Length: 144
Image (tube, rainbow, N blue to C red; front, side, top):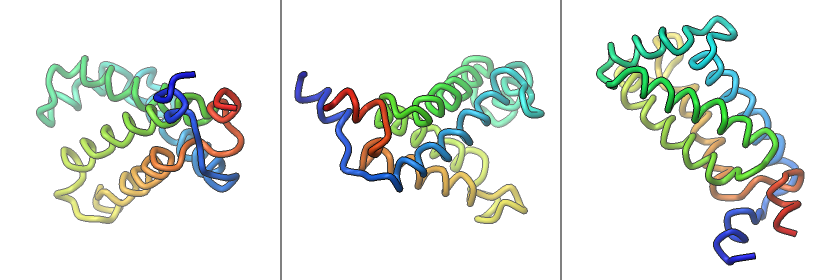
């Protein structure tokens, strides 16, 4: 296996990060399914595209596909621990965009549509990015 692939799949983390990875993955996958499919009360692709356009992220449909796809498929990748580091990188970038384009001007707290929840998800994604997927992951099984 090439050194790059080994580095991407390797993990220093234990069971604790596995738990964090799965919980954060569930939240991202559910949020992405709202954007893509309208599940769990979401706006679906059309509603998300309209929202993206309204905040200046154009073209709205492309932005909705990119953000929803990153959240949904990145979340699934975190849940099973397959290519968790690349998924965490994409989710970290996406979360930073959400914080600075939607939430930052509302302050920290969620009661005002602030960035506290996004910041917590960013922390979870960055932990996976730095430490790897953890002991119970497809990445670890492949790397061994």
